Length: 171
Image (cartoon, rainbow, N blue to C red; front, top):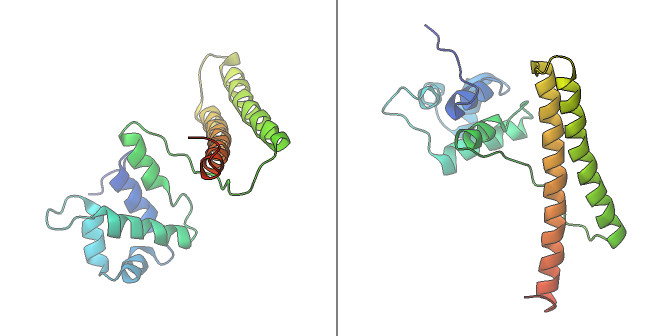
């Protein structure tokens, strides 16, 4: 009997992601230095003698999935965060310096992304006051884009603050 995977259960999502690794669980297990049977037992969650530990094994699995360009390699991390009431947002690279004009453009970009959320929601609810799966996927994309724009703006502000602290201009 096969149990249905729960897309919100981090272990189920990790198991599914591992199955998409090039060569499957067998290849991933070899890469991690363990047998396929041991990895399968660790991913099953029902074997009391085999457990994944986060720092080495789960993080290592995610690193391997990312390196192999497995689609949605980060889905287990998102499922884990969601299970505990959080959403993950990839922190954009904000290492370049920014001018006042560029900062104004970043703010405009962020506001535009928030406006896109409102537009897609309004379109979704316009006809039937319901949100289909396809409509929700569009909303989800817009929310993620807006959160990324907000995260980039936050990172730029953090960079400007740190520069001021380093130069002794702010405390």
